[in-house]
Image (tube, rainbow, N blue to C red; front, side):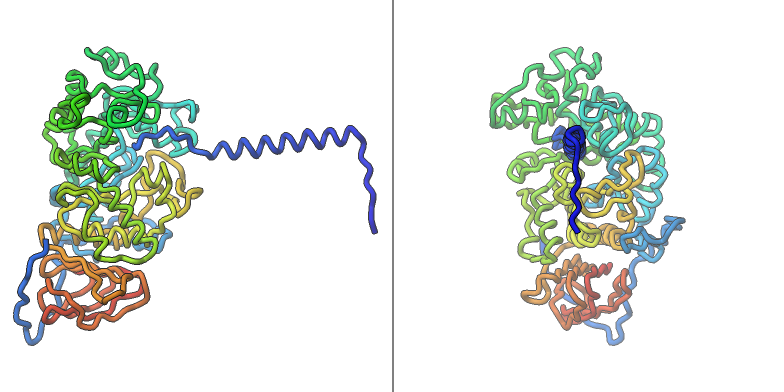
Length: 524
C-alpha cells in the first residue's frame, strides 16, 4: 500500500535549513581533523673457527643480573609483548655505556618527571641514552590550537609547540621546569643512562610578538625580519622554514647565545644533543654567500655525542664531515623491508649517507614520520621489531627508537592513543624483543658484522652475524629449519636463543637450528 504524505511550504523551508546546517557541521568536523602543516621538519674480517670440542657446552649468555622488577602492572601491553625482562641477559647492567654505538630511546613528549619515574625501565630495556623533546621555553597556544596551555599531542595543545621556542630558557609548561630537568639527569646518571636534548637552533616561533625581548635585543640581530624567497641553498638556510622566524646563525652573538645554552644543558646533566632541522643551518664550507662558523662554534660545547637531523642523504654526507647525522633514506629502506617482509641483505648492507657507520644515527621511524607525514603510523609493533632487529644488531651506527603514545595503534586515525603530552609512551620500548636486541648491541660492541640471506633467494630470512659469538636472525615467514647454512664468523659450539630458548649448533662455519615463525632470534 502506498501512502501519500503532504508537506506544507513552511516544512520544506525548515528541512532545507536543517540540511544546510548538517552540511556545515560535517564540513567543520572534517576541517577539525586536518593537521595544519606548521611543524618544523622538523668490515668483515675472516675468523678461523676453532677445533670443535667433542662434547660442546651450550653457549650461555653473559650474566648481567635480571634488572630487578621493571613493571608491577599487567604483564602484557596489549600488543602481544611480555614486559617481564628478568630472563634477558644484561651484561654491564647499571654501568654507563658510550652513546655512540649504543641505542637511544626517544622519549617523545614525555615530561622530565615521567622520564625520571621510568628510568629503571629504560635501563633494564638496555638503552644507553634517552632523548628528550625540546626543553626550551616555547609557545603555549597558537592560531591552530588556541586553547591556552593544552596538554594534548594533537588538539588542545600540540606536540609541535616544543619546536616553536620563544627563548633559550630551560623548561616549558609541557615538559617541566629546569629543576625537574636537573633531577631527571641526576636519576639518569644513577642508572647509567645518558641524556640527549633535542635542540631547536634554526628558528624561533612563527609568532614574532611571542619571542622574548632578551632574544630580540641580541646585538647584530636574532631573527631575519624579512623572509628569503626563491629556491636553492640561500633560501634553504636563510628562509623561514614553514613560516618560522629564521635565526641569524651567521651572527657571532647568536652563535654564542646558542653555545651558552648548550653549555648550560651540559652543566645541568645532559650528555649530548640532537639538532633539529640542521640542514637549514649553513656549513663552514658552504657556498661563499652563506657560509659561517656556526657549527664549529656551537659544537665545541663539551658534550659526549651530538648529531644533526638531515633528511637528505646527499647533504647528509656533507654534514657528516662535521658531526654524526641521521640516515633517513636508510630508514625508508628498513620500513619497506618491514612492510613487505622481504629483507634482502644486498640492499641492507650499505647505508645511504656516504659516511662511516659511526657517524650515522638510524631509525625505523622518527617523530616526523610518525606525526608529521604519518608515513610510518601504519606499522605494526611486529614490523617495528623486524626493523629494529636490523638497525640495533649492526655495528658502529647508533639507532634511535621512537616511543609511541600510550594507547596508540597502527593507523593515522588511531596513532595518538591517549593523546596526552607528558605521559609515558606505550610499553613497546621495553618489550623482550627490543630489550634483547639492545643488550645484544652492547654485548657485541666493536665486533665485525656480516649480513646475509642464509638460504638462497629466501628473503624473509635475514641473518646478521657479529664477531665470533653473536647472531640475530629475522624470520618474517613460517617456521624454518636451518640445516648447515653458512655462519662463517661464528665459533663452533651450541648456542641458545635468549628469546625462544631454541638451540642452534655451529660446526665448521655452518649453523643448524629451528627459527620460529614470524620471530627473531637473538644470540649473544
